[in-house]
Image (cartoon, rainbow, N blue to C red; front, side, top):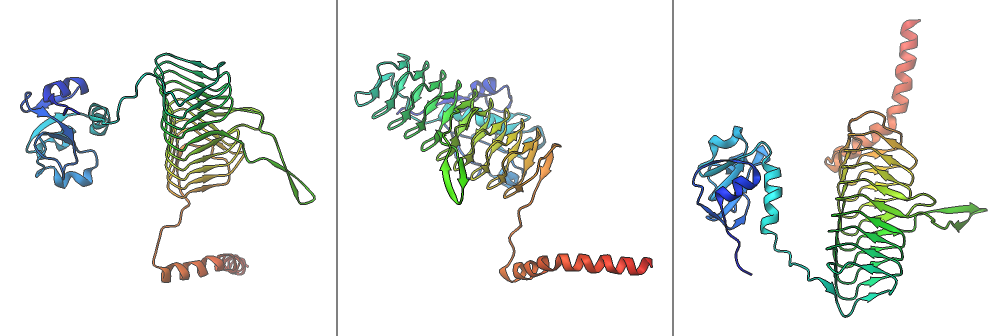
Length: 341
């Protein structure tokens, strides 16, 4: 593959950045401040990495105005350097282009509709009445269930499973191992015996949704599970049946959301956070890592409950004190009553 190369002025124009330096410098790749060499462009988004800015060997750096004076190389000025890096990263993406057409080993039901511009990889299965949009890419070994629909320009990496009646919007990106539309965890109990409930709903993903590797999104019991536009889900996330996630929310790895909970817009959930079922979470709620939510959250803001790691010795002492809190509280109440008397 031929090496990609761009003039620095070309990059500045595309990003809407102000250039300080040589517009004819050639950029051939992206790298961190520490690892960059001639031909690389780097960026500074986290102030803790500012110590590397002065000595970087990068041909150019993307920085904010506040940090520009520390750079000893060509500079592209942006208010949001991290966004500039994100946009530029696609210029150097080495992911191979998928060829249009259906691989000979794919199995397509005659009633399915597949756009001629789509790419259907080896050993893909597309079941009855499924609909595959324009320039969709479906990676090897994926399965598209009956009556499922995939919007234009969406990408499914190898081994993605869509069950029946799943709707994927436009420009979505589903990573390997994701399962969308699996049965929700629904059982009725009679005299200690569990009886399975058929899951009659589907799953609907909006436009520009990303679903990480091995993440699972359960189908609804009656109505559909709904993931809003622009939602970003990391790897190893569990979304229960009939959950609703508002537009542009983002969740880190190992988040778990129990069934029928409604998440607002622009929420951010840290890794390993869990939310109980049948709750309402307001817009713009930020959960720090390992937060457990068991009640409704009606106001935006930052919420935490995870216990920070400590030495085992100190943790054991704190655990004992925690068990004594109720007794201590009762003693304080008794003392207050005596002092008032």
